[in-house]
Image 1 (tube, protein in one colour):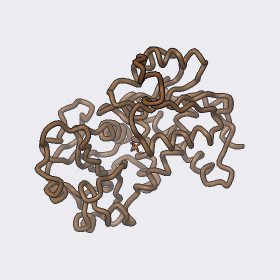
Image 2 (tube, protein in one colour):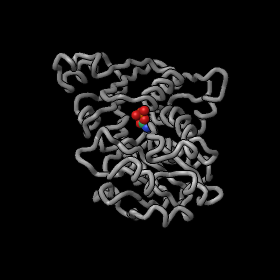
Image 3 (tube, protein in one colour):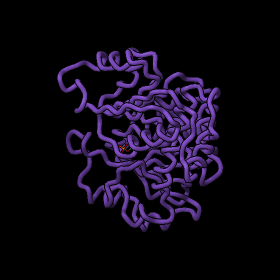
Image 4 (cartoon, helix red, strand yellow):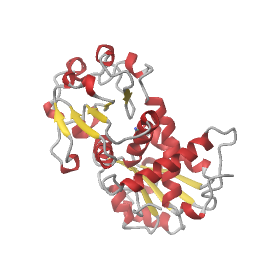
Length: 311
Ligand code: CP
């Protein structure tokens, strides 16, 4: 069992919580490789996917994870619910809660929405990404992918590169890596660097080219053009020249080093196509890990000890 009731952010997770999620995800990865990809672990449980912001990877992997755990699911989006008629989030949650559901998975444009949902339901809440705040399930699939490659997380050197100031991915991944004993360096133009205690213990630099040879993992972040106000980078081409992961930079990486990206990618901006599609890239492994790690999180949060993994 995890030490938290809800999965809202990664700083609340202990090293033991993270290890349990990653170890349990390994069992579910094996289920996902079977011809019949289904176990009865959450049979009879009801999970609501409340996605108030667009998503491809997170939404589809939660839905698949729920189906593979045999849970009953209800999918709601902002544009298809009574939110468009002016119903408040509180009334929406209390209405759905009255139907005796077990879990809400919440993606929202506004930071703090999943935490707010916990006030209006006794059900378990998972944050599937809230504004610029947190994306804890992304961090778990990232850690899983990295651990599968290296066999461990402690002592690894990880550079998180790019649009740190708008990134819930960085804000979740960096503390989780620190909890697991990795060294984290944040890299970006001065306008993207961060002054937030969540990054305590991380190095920060704008000199990407100085550290490439030293890193085990280069994790590039999407430049979040939709969340920007004002001109914070000179141009896409200039950004790519200084901070883009291109073939020349990739060629300087250690033999066993890997490249990650949470998706969706701006190819030609933070990462070039030749790198994204290279053998070093773990981007599609991250997507695969998203199903297994989300199965593990839901299984553990809904009292997995009393359930079954094997069919
Ligand atoms: N990485 C991620 O959260 O992608 P989606 O927005 O497609 O879910």
